[in-house]
Length: 152
Image (cartoon, rainbow, N blue to C red):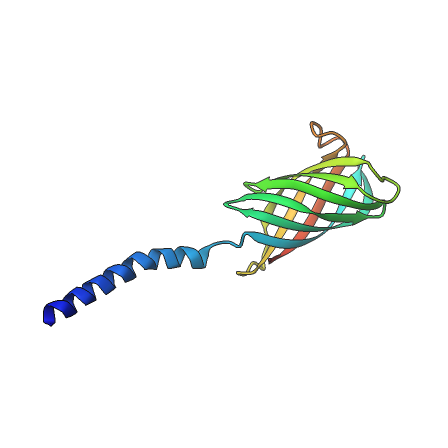
């Protein structure tokens, strides 16, 4: 009986030891989906063009993200798609309404973590450039934004 109890204790301890690292990894895992509300401003040829908003979903893991959503500014609404990784992003913006309907613009930028991060909320500060061609994302102007993201 004593041998059986020792074996049970040893097996239980071994199972606990094997599961502990897995549990630690699972609890520390970053969510795979974030829903982000961006508020920002943009310029064209050095002139402030006013505010914009983006409602963007980030879907991915390991700092490789697919980005999809909608955007709005004084010139219309648009769909926004792109990718982010290693704190660098590239977006394609296609206007679906307004003065620029069917126009396509390309944005690139970098971001840093801002204060206020919790387990289910991220706050990021972005800055970058935009243009009218995938190869030239700088010929239009600059942009900056703050994103508040909630785990989705």
